[in-house]
Image 1 (cartoon, rainbow, N blue to C red):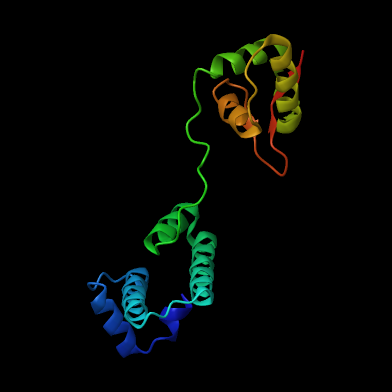
Image 2: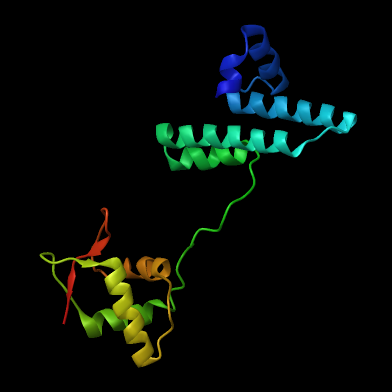
Length: 167
């Protein structure tokens, strides 16, 4: 965190005390930002460019945390820094839809560890099958989440594939 690294020892001690001596630079950063926002609010000075610069700095810190410590830590840091919420994750699939994907697998696929079908190709085949049978249309993401429940092994890589072949 560039802000923390730029502080001298007295500055670090001050902002850590303001944060309740948690030992976390992110907490000291939050204390600093609270104080800065209080000053800005009382002076009536709050510019958009400062806000964008602040967001960009925080996002860079989160990016570095992601590369160093993984996605889970980065997500927590994102929240700790008070950054705005971002898009929803696909979440848990609706298992009522699983019956349609399972029927598709039964009708059109044979598990085969020697062959791989690309996820997009498999999704396209499901979409065509869904039109024929009246099954619901699914996004590629939702289809992939449901495919994990079918027993067909998913192989991650540059292109996601499933160990199966068409009948």
